[in-house]
Every structure is written in structure tokens, then in C-alpha cells.
Image (cartoon, rainbow, N blue to C red; front, side):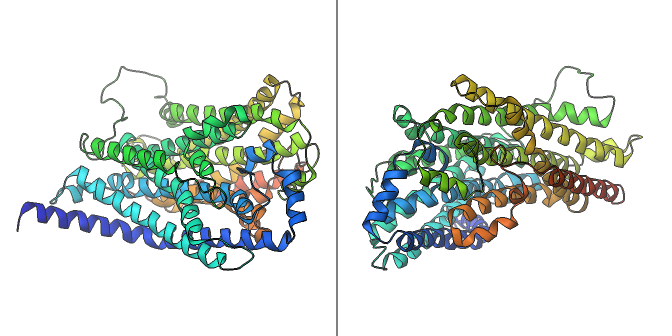
Amino acid sequence: MSADIVQLRAETAIARRAFKQLWIGAAAWALVFGGTVAASALSYVSSFPTASSRHQLAVTTGGDTGLAVLLGPVSSIDTVGGYTVYKCFVFLTTIGAIWAMVAATRLLRNEEDAGRWQLLLAGNTRPARATAATLGALGAAVAIVFCGTTLIIVLAGRDAKVGFGVGEAVLYALSIAVAPAVFGAVGALTSQLGSTRRMATGLGIGAFGLSFIVRMLADSGPHARWLLWATPFGWTELMRPLTHNDPWPLVPAAVTVVALSGAAIVLASRRDAGAGMLAARDMSSLRPFGLSSPSQLALRLEFPVLSAWLAGAAAAAFVFGIIVKVTTGKVPASLTKTLGRFGVKGAFANQYFGVAFLLVATLVALVPASQIGAASDEETSGRLAHVLAQPVQRARLFAGRLLLSGAAIALSGLLAGFAAWLGAKTQGVNLHFVSMVGAGLNVVPTALVTLGIGALLLSVAPRRAAGTVYGVVMWSLLIDLLGSIVARLSWLDRLSLFHYMALAPAQRADPKTLAITVMFALAMCVVATIRFGQRDVQRA
């Protein structure tokens, strides 16, 4: 048997193994995607059955820039297709992008962290070929999402009132597949850059956040529309599926996927297994800071990552503040009603920031996820054992790590509130300073609950802690968005952490609720600290 055939069999086995880890999740998301699209279309034809009602919706909402900034394209909203795209855009593109990016880092970087990738490379394959095989499996999973979504849309389109054709369904499903395809490739690339899965996932989340903000800026006015060509979310929007059906934005999407995938494959062949292109240097000059206690050591090691998260939260809030300028014009009643589905009230600028701070809350809630991942990696890699060999109290060490995370959460909320106020100030929009800072601090208790959940998981199953916390945060955001988009699924938002957070400044924060939330988070951290002091250190 030739060496090429042996290698081909090895890569086929790698692809098959990776696909087995993905296909169930891909099939589930295909049902969710297709079902969401079908529900939105059927809801529209029942809520707006006449041409006059649809025309009225277009007159009052169709040209509103503020709505486009928050929820995506609102053009052709007087048609079934245009309304469906508007209703599903944020939810489907967000969940698709994050699912594929996380899946890529799990299949690639996580396998290296666990040492299984090195075992694969000890066989009849090479890093580049193994990476390509894994990306092939991820591509097949994205294809399942595409095919399932297409099938359900075609079935919904058979309703005469909906009237989607097969070609329209295919192009719409392709537009939805753009985000997971691109960000799956992003995850593959960051898996080569980061030295751990935590770093790779953080880089991917950063790319996602930047792309999302660019899309929001592009929808802030006609002068910025060209920015849609600079983000994957913009390519989906430019296709205008189910209305104008322009396939040309698929070209930059395909080029980007090929380029990112190719870069990931090339980098995989040029580095050592287990290392990363952005790995720290093997030697550095002596820096006494951070060596006098475990807590100071954690601060020293995590300071760059924490600084990046703080800067990201502040930057996102600042951009939201800049965009608020578009909300100061005449506001149609239908737009207020749409935002009202999130439960926000009062002046429209406050309603806008209430929804915007939901996205900020998501970013702040990911801060503890990052720190839980760092603590998990420290333990499973064996580095924690060296620290505990010193005269260090385990409970004190654990509590110090949690205190560092809590301080970072509080500071990120404070910076976000100030940055949002400052961004609005630069546009001549004068908002109450204390109210905006309070809105930033309002997201802190929910993020502390995330920290408590992560701490409990870390004290019981450190290997699963970080991934579970990321999942809880993203699930909470997506369920909150889905509940506001599809009225019949509004009950789902009770399963979201953000359901119990007031959307300040559009909602008045209840001091009692805030106190209970903080106490609940503190209780989980205390239980986790006690549990951590009673169990053995685990290794990967």
C-alpha cells in the first residue's frame, strides 16, 4: 500500500472523527434556524394580512436608521421576505458565527491542549493535512445547517401567503451560512495563533465583536454603507435575500474563507504541536512584581488579557454612544413598539441604550469566562501543583483568583458606562452622567452570577468549566434575542440570565433584585471556594 493511500486513510479518519463531534449540533441548529425563519414569515402574514397594513409598517419603520443599527436591515419590510430577514438577521448570524468559531477551536486548539492532537500527528499524517481534514469536517457541518435551513424554508414557502421560491430559499440559506463559514475559518486561524484554547477563543470573540460593531457603524447612515463590505455580517446584509437576491457578496465571503483556512493550514505546518504563533517567549528579564503572593502572580499573568477585555468593553460602549446620534430624530411609533418587546420604556435614547447595554452585559459576562478558563488551564496543565507545593492555602488562592475576576467585572462595567456617555457626548447628545455610569454598573451583578457559576464548575469539573460558562452566556443572549424576535417564544427568555437584569437606563434597576443577585453570586463563590479546598488537583 502506497504512503499516499495510508495518509489519505489517516486524514479520512480524522475528518470522520471530527464530524461525529459536530453533526448532532449542526442538525439541531439547522432545525432552529429553519424554524425561526418559518415562524417569522408565518407570523408576518398573520399579523399584517393586507397591503395597507404592510404599507403602514414600511412607512413608519422601513427607513429608520436606529432600528437598522440595532437589529439589522429594515429595507423591503413591507414584504414577507424583507420582514423575515429583518426579524432573523441578528439572531441567526450571531449564533451561527459563535457556534462555528467555538467548534473550530474545540476541534483544533483544545485537542492540542489535551495532548490528543500530538498522538494523531504521531501517525501517518502531517499537521497541515490533519488541519485541512478537520476543516473539511467543519465545512460538512456548516453544509448540514445550510441544507436543513433550506429544506424548512422551502416547506414554509409552499404556503401561498408566504410564497418563497426554491431559489430564494437556497440563497437565503447561503446568506445565513456566510457567518458560520467565515468564523469557523477564523477559529481555525486563531487556533494556530493562540497557545491555548482560551487564547484562541478570546481572539475569535474579539474578531466577532469587531465585525459586529463595524456592521452597526455601517448601518448608522448612508455615508457609512461602504463599511458593509468590510464585515461578514455586511456581506449577509448586502445579499438582501428573499427580496433583491444579490449573490455577489458571496464572492468576498468565499475568498475570505479560503484565505483564512489556507493561512491556518500553512501556520499549522510551521509550528510545533502544543505551541502557538503568539506564544510567550521562553526567556524574559526578571520582573519581581507579582512574585510575593499567588494573587499578585495571577494579576501579573492575567493583566494583558484583562486589559484587553476592559478595553473591548469600553470600546464597544463608546461605539454605541457614537451611534446614539441617529436616534435623536423623529422616532416612529412602530419602532418604539419593537424596542418595547425588550421591555424598555421612556425616552428613545434610553430605550436604545437599554438594548445596547444588553450587548455590553454579554461582553462583561465573558470576562469571568476568560478567567475561569485561565484557572482551569493552570490546574489541568500542572502549573497549579507547583504553586500549591509552596506554603499556600488553597482556599485563599482560589478566593484571590475570584476576587481578581470580580474586580475586573466591576471595572469593566464602570468603564462601559463612562465610555457610552463619552461617545454620546462627542456627538452632541447630552445624557445624564450618573444614569449612564449606573447603567454600566447595572451589568455587574449578572456577570458576577456568571463568575459564581464558573467557580462552582471549576471546583467540581475544571476541564468543563470554561466551555460551559461561555455556553451559558451565549445561550442567555441568544434566548433573550429570540424571545424578543418571535412573540410566541417570549417565555424562553426566562431561561436567560439577562432576563433578571434591568435594561438600564430604560428600566429602573430594583435595589432588592440587585442585592439578591449579588448575594447569590457571592454564595456560589463561597461554596466553590470550600469545595476547591477539599478536592484533589486534577490533571489533563
